[in-house]
Image 1 (cartoon, rainbow, N blue to C red):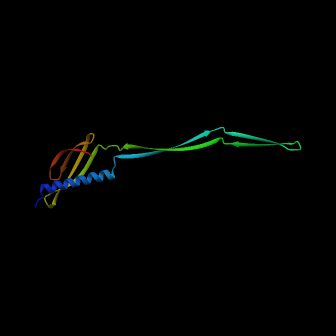
Image 2: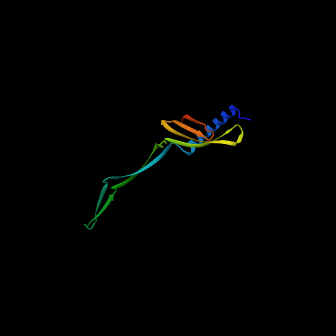
Image 3: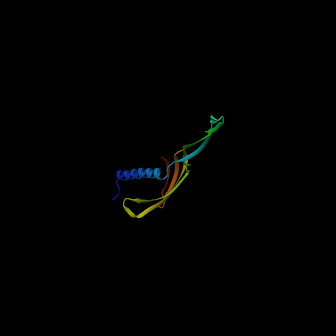
Length: 143
């Protein structure tokens, strides 16, 4: 008994979608850095008022009262926060191992190795070999 082509294709599609989702969730491509800057501004205002009161008493004596109102320094603290996004560095090599079965024959699997190298942007070229003597080349794209 062998697996039909449409079921194998559907299984490959489901695995590809799940792999892409898990990769994006656990290995995000963008990191966010938050930078907080606290700025202290000293605003000085010369707001000094001197009030002098002179009171003449009936016996001719002069009573002088001096009051100083001082509102000179006002301190203002401002906090600014900014976020910057950084792209994660891209890795240029991808190495993996796999196992193959033919139909439902689980007794004789083929084990293989593959290696891929980034050639430009998201594009890879690679090669593979397995224990049944098969080898191949591949071209792929990261998304």
